[in-house]
Image 1 (spheres, rainbow, N blue to C red):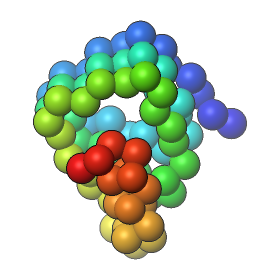
Image 2: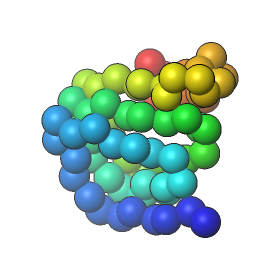
Image 3: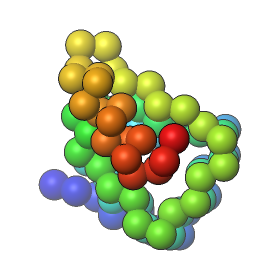
Image 4: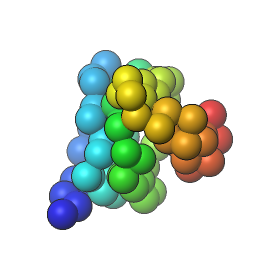
Amino acid sequence: MIIQITDSKFVDSVVEVDGNSYVNCTFTNCTFVTATGNYSFDKCSFNGGSLQPVSGSNAEAVVSLFVGLHGR
C-alpha cells in the first residue's frame, strides 16, 4: 500500500521514503532513507540532502533509482 503525502515541507529531516508517494512537496537538507526503492516523487523540489540506503538492502540499485529521479 502506497501512502500519498501532498503539499508538505520537510526541513533538516530524516525521511523514510519507502511506501510513500510525495506530490508537490519541498525537501530542504533532508536525508532520505530507503531499503527498497519503492517510493515516488511528483512535482517535488529538493534543496540539498542525501540518500542513505539501509544496510543490507540492494544499495546500488536504490542509489541508481534516486540519482535517476533527481539528477544527483
